[in-house]
Image: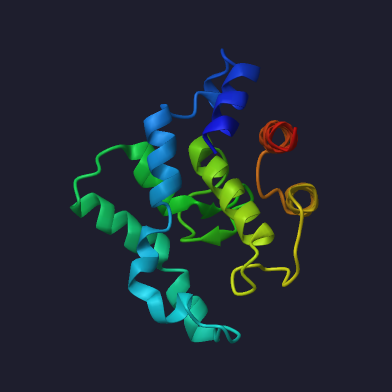
Length: 174
């Protein structure tokens, strides 16, 4: 994830939209974005299909995480907003459903993209939304289609992040 942030910053060093966060803010947002799931161990460890009630609880984890971190003394609005809004999408879909479009910070989109990729490529059947092993390339294609069709993320921003991830993935194989 830190490599992705660096790649993005190198491609657009003067663009305010891409002045995402300090490395520390990015790292903390990435590590802490699912803090609210601490209240739902019973759901996270479930191996069977989630119920509608389970999904209602899961959709509360961004707000719960935000509250936990605020009480713990995290003061960075970038980190707190990334935790609170990492499931929000450009078109206004997602949860907790408060911010939309341009009011969602780039760091939040970046954390959301990386979180989605993890969910799609996870080898754990419980967390893998496709229920099969999916490569990084396939996962990026799935999110790109969703981005184009539903306007989940800003397309140009997503392309930059995808290129960063793909080039890092190739560098790792070499």
